[in-house]
Structure formats: structure tokens, C-alpha cells
Image 1: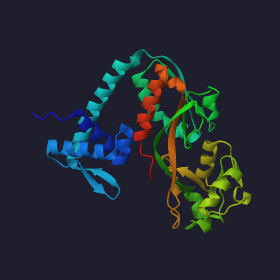
Image 2 (image 1 turned 30 degrees about the horizontal axis):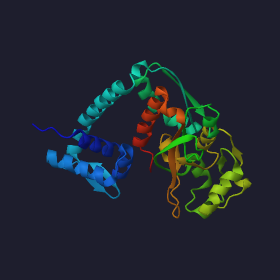
Image 3 (image 1 turned 180 degrees about the vertical axis):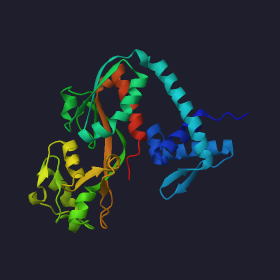
Length: 297
């Protein structure tokens, strides 16, 4: 009777859920060659091919898809054992505040909240929709999801993955104004602002995108409000692909001379992580969720 090594199954599961060896290695804290050897060892143990390589990504074979469901059940059981051994998750209680941009707060975090409700039902989670990393320093939040690594020495940061973003517009806007095909075309279009316009212009300039205040006839300090304005046809905005693909009424602009933009995704907290069971639990569950989430184009 076959009895595959759990480490090999765990490597397969992480690779299947992240879609690449490099992302899976980061998730498990392994080097990519080590993880690759573990996956190859599992294939040798089972005598089947689990992945096919498609360009830079991996696709599950039929045998891999069959194994995935069983592996997930094993992973859930292992997670349950770890939680029972390290913290009695069912008994952990208290308030944990997570701060993230309002887009991530509304469109990304609900999935991890469901996991936390199942694992630690006595916890209370509050989402602080804001972009200011000082929320952690003032203890207005316990954990932050950010695109920039915090430099404050009293904070602990862990990179989750690299995300992608593109420019998006509603079909109604594109039908009315035409579809830009290059960076130069963007200067003749309307944009929706969702914050500081001079700062946004500063981000666009190194990309070779020349805009001015006149390109921003409407906007909002709220990212959610700005996104709704985009959906209603008021202009163009850069948006994370993981968020934009939830809105079928907007389309990505496939600019011939500009590949998808890349942004790192960081998870940060203060040093109470080492002494607070509730913060440790939420940080670990959130890290696992964000690392495995498909956030690239």
C-alpha cells in the first residue's frame, strides 16, 4: 500500500493552488529546487505525471486534478491538528483589526474572514479601510495589507506575492470615446482619480504616460467610489486584476506598448505578533490565504 510522504503532498498542494513552483516555495518557506524535488518525488512514488508546464505556469494533469481534492482534505486535517496543538483556536477570542485599501477590504478580504470564522468563531475582526501604514504605529490596526514594504523597525513584514494591475474602463466609456491602443493614446482620455492627483501623475511619468490635471474631470478620495465611477463610464483607472475581474462591465485596455503593471503585496504587523495568540492566528491564516490567491494576470 502506498504511503506518500506528507511533505511531498504538501509541496504538490501548494504548487497546485499557487500555479507555480516559485510561489509555492515562498508559501512553504522552501527553496524552489527543494520544492521541485518534493513534487518530483511524489510523482515517482505514485507513478503518474501531476503537472504539465505551459509557458511559465503549470497546469494539473487529469491525475493531478484527482489527487488535488484528496490532498486538500489532508491539508485541512493537518491545519486543524496544528491549530489544536498550538493555540486552541476555538477558544481564542478578542478583537483584531486588519487595515487594507478599500478595494482589497471589499473584494479580497471577505474570503479570509470566512476561514477565520470557521477556525476561531470567538474572534472579532474589524476591517479598517485605509492606505496609511501609520495605522499600525498608532495601534489603530493590528495587521496591514500593503503594496509597499514598511520600513519602520518596530514592524514585521512578510511579502505574500507579486500582483498585477492594468488600466480598465467600462464598455460604455470605450464605445463613446474609443479604445486607446498605446500609452500615447491615453493622454486624450478621461481618468477617474482616487486620491492625490499629483502623486498619481508622478507614478505615471516613469511609465511614459503623459497626463495632466485636465485628464481628471471626476474623482473621489474613496477607491470604491472611484471604481463605481469607472464602472458607470466616467473614465479610465488602473486597477488590480484580481479586483477588476469581479466586474464584468469593465474591460482591460490591452496597450500594445505596456505590459501589465506589477505590485508586491506585503503583510505587516507590530511585534506583538510574538506574544498575542489572536494576532498570530489571524496573521498566519491571512498569509496563507493571500499567498495562495490568484492575483496575477
